[in-house]
Image (tube, rainbow, N blue to C red; front, side, top):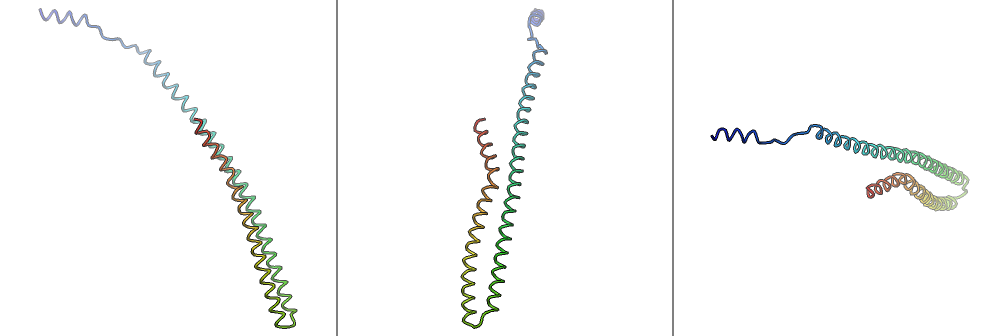
Length: 152
């Protein structure tokens, strides 16, 4: 009897049915959501890369311009120094006495020190402006990126 009871119990047991279409729909929805998130992440990455490229190009152009300014300032300083040296040499050749040579040399050295200090100030001002101009596009891009991260 127990054998027939077991057979009856097995016949009465119901197994949950598995609906493959529901599972397929859920998998498809999950995959589509993943694709959308990937597209959004790619778009953000692409935008960030383009903005970085623009900032670097701007920085390069600014650095090129600033380099040109510094080169011109250097050439002008070298020219002024050479002219001052030649003028001093001509004055020394025309000196009539040792005391006049000493006086010319002293005046020349004083002018050279003053000129050197003035040139150093000019170079410092140009270099400070150059550093600011070159770093500005990168700083702006960085601040924008930080702002966007805070928003997200």
